[in-house]
Image 1: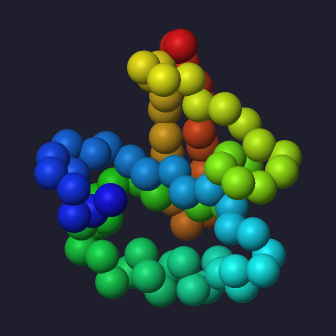
Image 2: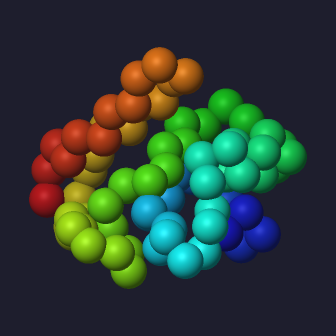
Length: 81
């Protein structure tokens, strides 16, 4: 995604949970995030229940959400849809 046009307008990123068979750990994800300067300064949360794993949530298209991410706390709140 970071190589797509207009990525500079992205205000945050939510990454779904990987299937167990992929063996993608939180540590591996964090190492990848640290190498991507495009992610500096925007909130990123991972292991969210959407995508190709169960249980899953649905993100409304065209909605508005609040995303906050710190080392100790993550918040994803759907405000409007």
